[in-house]
Amino acid sequence: MVLVSIPVGKMVDKIGAKIPLILGSVTLATASLLFANGNFLTIMVSMFLLGVVHLLVMSSAMALSAGLVEPENRGKVRGFINFTGYISTGVGMLLGNGFYNLVPQLPFYVTIGLTFPMMLIVLLRVHEPQSH
Image (cartoon, rainbow, N blue to C red; front, side, top):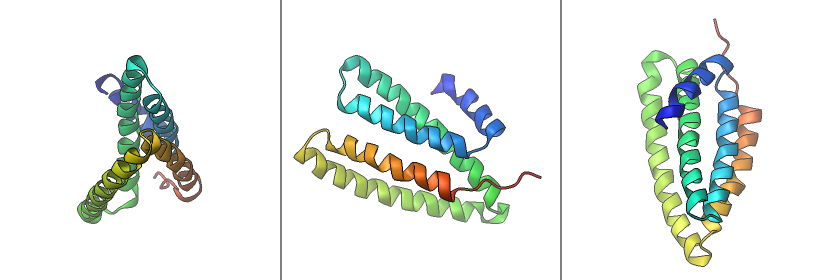
């Protein structure tokens, strides 16, 4: 993550946040597939890719929220996003445990399946703010 963080940040600054969000979805699907069906080497590559996913999505999301939310409301918006994110993480852990008990690879395949609606939402519903 340390090696990739500066290039990802520069990419978000140059091309905007929408393309890195889509790249994050594609990278997440790839990393999940490698992890679900992997050996030691592919799991290590998958963990690297998951770090890249985190950088792509978080830097893009922060850039979008900085451009779309007024400065006096950013704390409230970030707080709400963090709150709902942590609740969703807890629910996801419970569901993932149930899926894992059925078929060990199922949580990863569900993740891959959810990346496609995520990409569609980004493509169709996310609009970057006009730069001044």
